Amino acid sequence: MGCTEENKTVLGTYVLRDEANVWWKNVKLRIGMEGVAIVWE
Image (cartoon, rainbow, N blue to C red; front, side, top):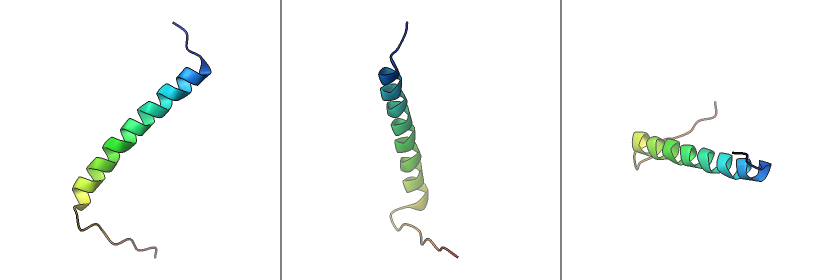
């Protein structure tokens, strides 16, 4: 079964977005509601 380049792009975007959402949920669980201070030094 072949896919067009557009369909491949749509699927790839969906997969990456889903993985990013899972990652972000895990980050929020680790840092908690207080957050964390980011220092650039």
